[in-house]
Amino acid sequence: MLLWFLSVVVAVMVCEGLGRDCDDFTDLGFHDSFIGTKLKVKILLYTKDNIDCGDEVSHHNLTSAPMFNLTRRTTFVIHGYRPTGAPPVWMGKIVRQLISQDDMNVLVVDWNRGAANINYLIAVTNTKKTAENITSFIQVMQANGASLSSIHMIGVSLGAHISGFVGANFKGQIGRITALDPAGPMFTGTPPEDRLDPTDAQFIDVLHTDMDALGFRKPLGHIDFYANGGADQPGCPRTIFSGKEYFVCDHQRSVFLFLCSLNKTCNITAYPCTSYTDFLDGKCMNCDTFKPAPCPTFGYYISEWRDTILRLNQTKAFFSTNADPPYCRTNYLVDIVPWNKPIRWGVITIKMHSGEDVAEAKIDHKAAKFEKYKGTTLLAQFDKHLQTVQKISLQFSTQNVVGPRYKLRVLRIQIRPLESSDGPGLCRYDIILEENVDVSFRPLPCEKSDF
Image 1 (cartoon, rainbow, N blue to C red):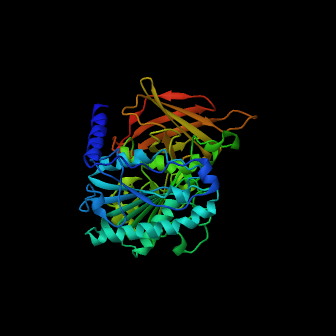
Image 2: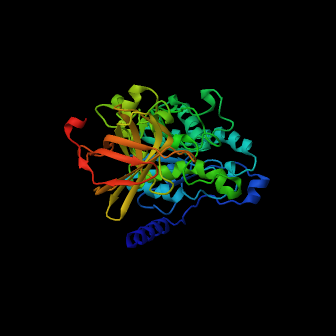
Image 3: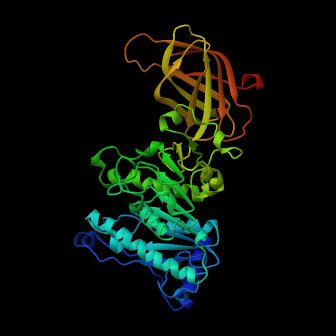
């Protein structure tokens, strides 16, 4: 808290020493959105020396912002549609977290006077005009020695397509574009020149969180991440009676997941796969195409896998999250060899215990088939990570409301961690599972012969 206070004091002192107040993001209201406003683009500079005090940069004279050091890398942050006219709630967080990663320039593109309009079509029209404005600004940066490859553009919703238009103006020489749930309405079905596409930058990573409503469904980058399949996000309301959150929660989750990757509260491992169903079925867990690197980690640090991703040309990757921060789940592969002669169909719930701490995984997206002596492999996604596991509980269910209660006899179960090297995994042998009854046991380290 003290460090934060001192940073604010220093930022204010710097701004006061330069004889100017902090420049703020344009704050409009619903009245402005209703009557409409004329597009005006402001570019606000933030650095380690003014992390909480924006400094508006002249489009034509960069010396108007003495803290703008073009030898540093530069990250543009571009917001999307603002129907209420209010500033994005996440803007200050993303600025601070970016600067905490590296000594960089963060340029917030404030085009709120073009995005705040109840008529979405007008905001869409203003995206290309905003892109032209940013293009002219970058040309001035180039004239003063900046390198296009050192520029990273982070665009949210409509901001993702603005980033693409800017990148296209520089014939794909911008270093990186991160697109957070690119807008779908008015862009779906359009040609590449009218939206973001993989030729707009040297490297493009995309996150999809609301592809069935406000977001874009198809891949748009070199790697496209689909959180929870890319549509409905856990914890977001499912009925219109929840008000505004019903419309924005899935869409806005893209920003909060990216923030999670910046503050390193958890590393979200993503798995290249053809579909979310195959991912949930545990068919895409080995990342063979990414050798010698492991499966990629979603978010800010995905550039570490850049060379492999570019070699693969265009990759879709999937992951699942929890409903609340820090969002990440811990993935295990579960191999079950049943003994029952009759084939059983059902779902499995696994709980890991460490003292009073419990991590749970419900493998219930579809009924699994358990056939005598034939191994069944399942993906178990636990809601938290436990350093040590003292006890495991299993429950088998056919999910039948009426009818007999079945048993499932398991000759062997193996539970193997996917994202850590916590040894060879956990095993147990010869267990009888009564339907809808928790069966607990102390796990044993697996032998090499089990694999």
